[in-house]
Amino acid sequence: MTAKRLSGARMQPVELDEGSMSAGVPVRAAAASPDTHRVAARPVVGRRGRRIGAVGALVVLLLVAGVVGAVQVRDSWRADAIAAVPGLVRPLDGPPQELWRAPVSSVAREAVLVADGALVLLDDDGPVWQLSAYEVGSGAPRWSRRLVPVVTAPETTGTQAVNGVTVRCPSQGADVGPWVVCAITGPDPTVWFGRSRVVIVSAEDGSTAARWTVPGRLLGVSRVQDDVVVVSADRTGLVEVTRLEAPSGEVLWSVPTGDQLISWLGADPVKVEADARFVLVSGAGSAALRARDGVALVPTPPLSAIRLAAAGDHLAAWSIAEGGWWFDASGTPLFPLPALPVEARADDGSVDVVLLVDLGSRLQGLDSRSGAVLWSIDSRRDVALLVDSRAVVTGADGYGVIDPRDGHEVWTVDRDEPLPWIPVSDGGSVLAPGPPGSSSLVALGLGDGIRYWSIELPERVVDVRGVDGHLLVRTPDEVVVMG
Image (cartoon, rainbow, N blue to C red):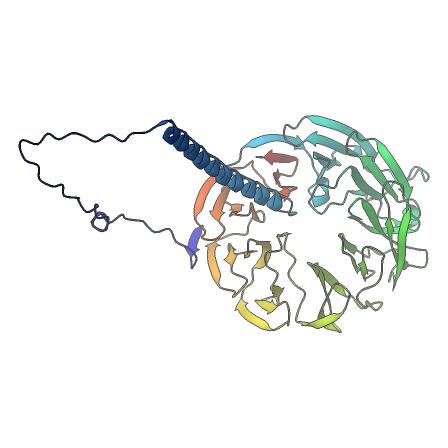
């Protein structure tokens, strides 16, 4: 692994030039005659003077304490802000240590989430899907419960589902709050039609707060704060998006997308992304909706195979037939796009004046206000992280950092083999895989690529990720909490 520093700040040795630090000009005293007695003058300090001196010292101490307190508050605020960004890790003071570990065989991202301050794990290593909660700091078990048998179809049919049961507990990477939402379905739409379920579990004690049956065929599920967004299809294949309040199940709004499944028995994958502003559905059914009321913001003609993405309070849409467009929060088109903006695993919002678009063999930076091309570089690396006005890029040949303002490469690390997992960041450093053949994690300065420290990780690491600010290391059968 070879690190190349191409630009950025460089630590320079600082030398103090003693010649330039001239002593004060000596004050020459008048010559005294031999007969003259020299009496040393002593300043007379009364009680008032001592009180003034004490008050002055106290003021200085208070000022120093105030400055230190302000710095601590600022650092604490920054640490909390970084930890609140899905995918980032709370700033580390030094090499982290293993706090505890727990078994979890599913490598899906939804298999690990944080709810009400507890780490919740979804595991299918056994006859049942098991949902377990642990205290994040200590690993002490909070609760554990069974959800559904792994291979048995809905109880009402008594039949076996050949490909097993699918359970998903969606999360955007932040603490999901008091409710864990899990969707239970299976691969056979004939068996599972009208029998898929959404289960609302209390993060405090694991009890079932609610259980809903999804009418039709369940295609996808996501969350908007405590609410649940469900994408389903009726018997004719018409796709509908519904937002329900949790845990009551009250329908807040329901919107047909106008799409129809091409094949009722086909897989028809659907991608659902939701936050407090937008609900985006791509795949078998496409929709760009306002999260508050379900109002359609972007035209999504049936069978258009349109792809959607959100960036801040804006939307992007792209299709082979129509190309791409950039929209404001109301759905007003602003300018055309050559491709969708990159979807980073973590984005702290610091890169807001530049849109990064990936054209395959080229990466471009566009002015987010006009769409004008600011720069374009040859690159086959993907943008993985957007943090502190930097873009962390990864590819088969290594990883590095570029400046999204002008596209220049800040530093890079070349590798002879693909990365075993995607680097993460704590806001000040890039936490990346060590040299090929090792199982280490190295911390490199985000702005300069300087190596700060290195630690050994467990063997066979498949993913390293920040979840609600916690550094989690995944292997095929465990999750390791670092801190």
